[in-house]
Image (cartoon, rainbow, N blue to C red):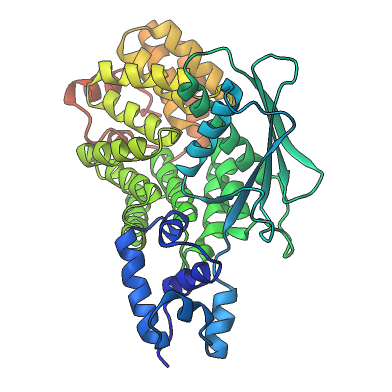
Length: 440
């Protein structure tokens, strides 16, 4: 018998779990047509005529072994507790959060009616019984009693959609960061790919070369050969993008590897928001800002909660002289994104302030950012530029010294490479403000 491909085994595994074609699309982030094509080929290989026969068809021992090792779903179980008035703002907010979580296309979301499925995370939602419009959310691992994260959301806004978006970003980020601190066991209801990806997701917030090496080591094996998970691939792509920006090694090699990742992503899941994000990252490294903008707009339309897409788009607008669009996007991001996730938005704002000539404000904000990410090369360069403009020679020297401690091989050409695709006026302004730092 001809063997099934890894992707066909994934689809057959989901079919056996009772998922519809639409649910398989969401789980694997592939199009409906792609699912139909794969099912047609599966029927042919298994010599069956429909999904029921395919689900019950016997496989060779090798196929059975492989299918057991296919990537697991990450299942979220939403559960309401106590009195929950169906026409209240709290209930409307709850429904909007569930809908928004779907837009990440990472989870299979179930309710209490699916009693045979063990969830990776149990999300309990309840409303205040005092009459106040408050929504309480807590997250547990599986069906354990241990609370992983909890919060209360006061509903004092008429814009429930905006509040749902902000709450969903907070929920997703909190689950991801809490997962990064957990230890994986074989009996865990949470799949290993989620542990590995969120661990690296959290590490990359430090913007250090050490985090880059960790990502390569931890995620590389998960995306080699026939293995595939688009979220894992996206986190790995982000690591290589930061390596390009921060000059961790050879920039050309980082861009080339990112290109290879992008090709794999588009081959396996061309309609996935994570594949589109990867394509945007790659296009930025090769200076193709127009293509990057197009991909980022598609991602934001598909999932407005994607912080990375908003930040990248605002940065490109800044670098290409579209300051009004950049300002609107950054302000909108600051309004919608929880405070704990605003670091990258503030980084974009520092460059905006520099271009607007608000040098003192830019310098103060950049200094705050460096408290949390002292190795952030772009922010260190912006502070040096501010010091040059303000005539703060000694402070400029101190920051330049620290910059070359972290990046001893940094050259003027490396910085110019980062500005590839930027308008000549902006590029000249920024490079002029870095006067003398490369004469060591």
